[in-house]
Image (cartoon, rainbow over the protein chains, first blue to last red):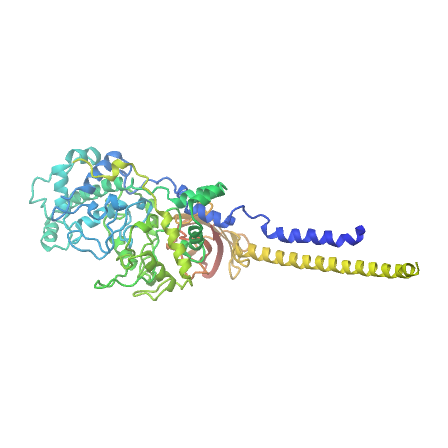
Amino acid sequence: MTLRTRHPLVLALVLVALAAGFPACGANPHPWSSKERTTLQSLWIGSLKPLPPDPSNKYGDDLRAARLGQKLFFDTRFSSNGKVACATCHHPDQLFQDGLPLAIGVGTTTRRTMTIIGTAYSPWFFWDGSTDSQWSQATDPMEGPDEHGGTRGQYAHLIADFYRTEYEAIFGPLPDLSNTRRFPIVAGPVENQAASKRWKEMRPENRMSVSRVYANMGKAIAAYERKIMPGPSRFDQYVEAVLKDDLRNARSRLTPHEVAGLRLFIGKGECTKCHNGPLFTNNDFHNTGVPAAPNLPEDTGRAKGAMQVLKDEFNCLGPFSDASRDDCAELRFMVVGEKRLVGQFKPPSLRNVAERAPYMHAGQFKTLEEVLGHYNRAPAAPVGKSELKPLGLTDTEIADLIAFLKTLTGPLATEPEWLVSPKK
Amino acid sequence: MNTSQESKPDTQISRRESRNKRGIIWWVLGSLAVVVLVIAVVVAIRMAHKNSTPATPDFATTRTSDRRLYKVSFKSALEPIPINEIHTWTIHLETSAGKPVENAKILVDGLMPEHGHGLPTQPQVTNYLGNGDYTVEGMKFQMAGWWQVNFHITADGKSDKVTFNLTLI
């Protein structure tokens, strides 16, 4: 054969080689595109920024306040029946939640207990964002009729009787509460009519000083709760290996099913619309058409929560907040009074999600299978309008997604001393 | 001998034929390769497009308003524009002739065209800084993707709207 006749063969081989190689040009040596890598990195716990200070709580990073807060968190005297503490629903050995569909304090509430882990990063608290700081959140259940069931008058007296030294070292002198006619023990702006009547009869400045003790209790509890942070899961180890291009290590962290689930999570499943960032939540509010809980009154979620936080005396702009007006952008520019807020609830973090069934704001779903089945079907909302559209996931895809969600289980990044009841 | 003499041209003919046949095969192979290459290029281009935002929106940070009354630009206090973090923008407003616009009334809203929902906050113009610059507080985006931010501007009795496109990752 002459060179001339061979020429087309050479050309053909070169072209075939080019054709075969072309789509791979610029591709990474592992199965994630550069855009997907960016998404993975954004979900990675290594992307979690150091916790910024809470401008509304100047004691938030005071170790003495955290130690006092830890004692208050576990102290059952801070309730109407002497049996309920924060830790009653937020068990440290159960990821700071209780595993129940509805929280049980002195009575049964209408919502599921939310975990405390990592919530210090959130601008909004509770399922409906009805408070805007960790400290104002901490005070709220204290006077809830089905939660702690007590009053701020009672709590101020308990602080004076049992925590005076620690309290005064942090917050300054307590008011003189010894005259129980001026400072009744059962008094607060609560449902209980006797307590409410006594509260209204108090002089405004006395009400103010009791409320300040109450707010400071919340600030101490928040200083403690700011320590409760999530640690790396298998998913985080996988992403770390992917980002280092250490494929062998990555493959040892997640199974092919889990990786397939992760791909669905950031793709077809559309999960990262709401569950984004290193805490797997955008801390916003969404109507996902979760069915109403049986035997409970209609729950409009954020629509009511937005109204409540605006009126809350303990909000960022209120007299007990340490923040300047400029620090309160979330509250000042919040959406309120719009129809779209009806039926919206806050997406919780998905870290450790497999370990804390049941799911949704009233524990409507017992398993992750039920949750994924709901998102896949996207039924109409019982109140307001659901944002969901049917996803068309197959049974295998749902199984892969659940396998992935289980890789988000990890230990807490919190010193063990904070995870137990302190010695009284 | 006769046979061999007679057979020689035959062999030459058959060799020439087989050479022609081989040539045809190479050219067929070559053409196939070209087809494969074209397909690969098309697939690669499609894949590249799939991974980027729609090619149509204009992502410029300086734009002319719909009725061409104003030239508007924005600057975010945080770059790159973050997800889930409330922050402030500054917008600059001037006439098409380049004169700063003062005393404008400006309303802000946002939209994810592919999702049909807006911003998680209600941003507001809170301050006039002079020279046609206005502070916009309460900007916040709750997810990655293609966003549109609209400024509805009223000044000197005339109204216009400008839309900025953003891609957040």
